Each structure stands twice: as structure tokens, then as C-alpha cells.
Image 1 (spheres, rainbow, N blue to C red):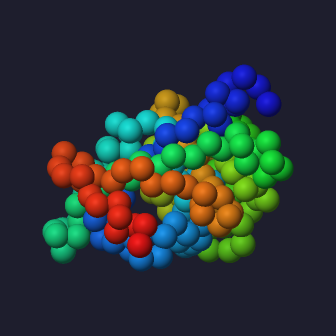
Image 2 (image 1 turned 60 degrees about the vertical axis):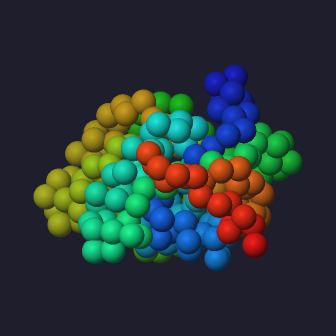
Length: 198
């Protein structure tokens, strides 16, 4: 493990952007590693976290815009703050993969995960982390599926830097270790985390 990887996996505060509706769902079901099955995501199915609070706030705001406003009382941006130290689980034998840069290895990995989002997991890692694509990959993959662009075109797009980082937990045992420290509405009030702990 490089020093850059170790520094990333030693981070202990992580953020998850969502909506008020999903916050209520999380309070009932807790964190599920397979809650996003059927979504085309960088590292496949899992629970995604960011080390950057501002990036997470923007993601939550973008999610609200994407969802529309059919139920405005539910479609409110929320950020969840968790305490978790990935390096502890990596040192205890959980498998991991870290992507430090936007290179061919990263783009191929993301392509396979996003292409096979309806099928079985395309990798065996318990923890994945590193750089991330932006919000356009969904559109790019749709263009690929209808033969508007080639696989080579997709890989080039996935190698464009966004300077953002992400962590994904693919094992339920790891999701169960996340400790919720805070939950709040973006630019609004703090939510009662006791609702989650019930």
C-alpha cells in the first residue's frame, strides 16, 4: 500500500449525500450494501461515501434536481456524516482496491461495473476507493448501449479528471460498522440521529 493510499484509508469522517425520503428509509432499514442494485455506478453496487463535505452537499443538491419535485417535502437534500476507519478493516483482511488516478485501469474498471449493473458484481473487493467520474457517465453509458459511441470513446471520457474522491463499501459487515455522527438538511436544520439508532 502506498502512502497516498494509506492516507486515504486512514480518513475517519465520511459523508453521504441523499434526500429526506431516503434518510427516512435508512432510519428504518439501516445501511444496506445492496440498496442501489440496478444503478450504474463507478464501482458497482455498494454504499458510497465521500471524504469531502462540500462535494457531498453538492451531490445531494444535484440529486434533488435530478429527482424532480413531485413530493417536495421528501425531495430535500440531506447529508449524513459517519465515523469509520477503512484501514482497520483492510488490516484485518478485507480486500480492497484503490484508484489513484484517471488511467486506463480506472476507466476499464468503471466501464465494466457500469455496463454490468443489472448482473452479478464484476469484482471481488470489499472496499473500493479513489478517484471518481462526474455525473455524466450515466449519459455516456446510455450512448454506448444504443451504439452512438464506442467503448474506446467511453474509456476516454472516464479518464477526464474531476478531482473528486469516493469510497464504496461492498460488504454488509462493513456497512454495519458505520457510526452515524450527524445528519442535516443542506442549508437547513440538523436531523435527529436517534431516529436512525432506534
